[in-house]
Image 1 (cartoon, rainbow over the protein chains, first blue to last red):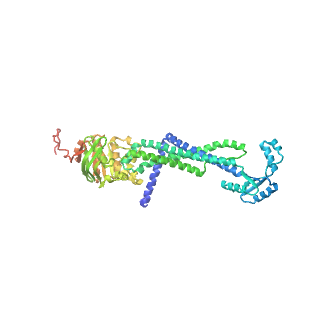
Image 2: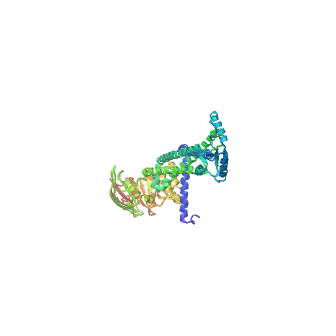
Image 3: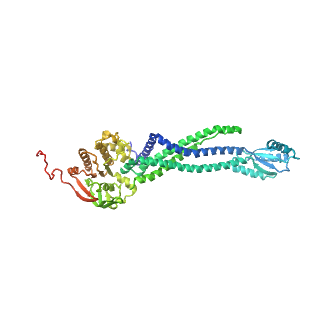
Length: 315
Length: 238
């Protein structure tokens, strides 16, 4: 039946078969030396899991900060001369806008009461001849207004309205947190880059030892006319397997870390009467982690193979 | 098939291994290459297999000037040549079958075809029953025959053998050489380096003699029986 198939198809079949055999033979070889394989895989996994965990934590905190920020009101401090009636008219006008969800009016008296309660200035405030506070409108952006830039634009627009003295986002501290998080994210990438280099070196060194161990075999293959690609192939697959297995173990480590962190996070969240569900790597990130591991493994072995095979085959 | 023209090979650390060597070996011709250790036998074989390149002169195999062969075509060149070594160079972890199949596997041949050819080669050397054995479980003579099967499995145009009987007793050596002679019949060129002078004389093939890197003799030795000294034992008269 194979004689009927066109020649190129048979060649392709042979090529695929060769690769499949190289891949499975190499995996067999790794499994037959489980301890050595595990050590290499664990080193790769730790190097990948560290930045991945940091990224997962940063992601969770950013998500949380975003929620806080979206939930937070913009405070409009009206001009000192305006009374509650004028504030009410402005609030009614604002409520008709689509980029605004809810508007609460905080009367001057209510503002003073709140200040007395939370500031601890109680007695001192009583000394004031009259209420110095302006009318305040608490403006909540529309729920679908999530982009930070849109919220910022809304804030600027509100500040410019006639009768508004100044506008302020209550969640200013969240914004600072977000800045810190983005710094953390960039640092994680930098750390990740260094650790990726570490993975390449670990795989490269392992493959170098493997080449030394199989020196005789390589020399014989060279003598009987094996091409460079054929000789390199098992080593490249070994690198890819190391990387992939390292990626899988790293993924498990990240998920374990997130699971372990959930408990302390629950305790903190309870203090703030909040619910915070930590999320591990999503599908996209998981695939990226495994792919990156495989790629780094292949790069490491390609470098080692290129350097050391050339030494064995001088002509 | 093989053509050497004024070939010299100089190693930086050892000096001249071959000096101004010229000869040709035709298709279907078998020749022995002999001389003391260090006379340049192995170097000569290495030049043909492109394990080394000459310092001067040209080596042609099947009409191709090896000096013009780029690096990437060396594997294909080596597949035209079957090499047999004194120490067999078998892979200890792989079965006899896998060892013999190696040249075909690395050439990307189809699996069914590989099976057919490997069994044919093992049949030729009389080891068909041992295809699943590991090389180290075989005797030295059997290992050498596996090496020969590996050398011929790719149907090479040239077979080079470097002291193929160095570790074998005379009977086994003779058996191995008989095996080689059968390949000549199908048009393969054979060049066999050996210092087994008795055997060379008894077989009566062309013999190239190297001395300190120079070709000092190229002749067919006289037929084996009429030796200068008369045989002491009484031979039954025909």
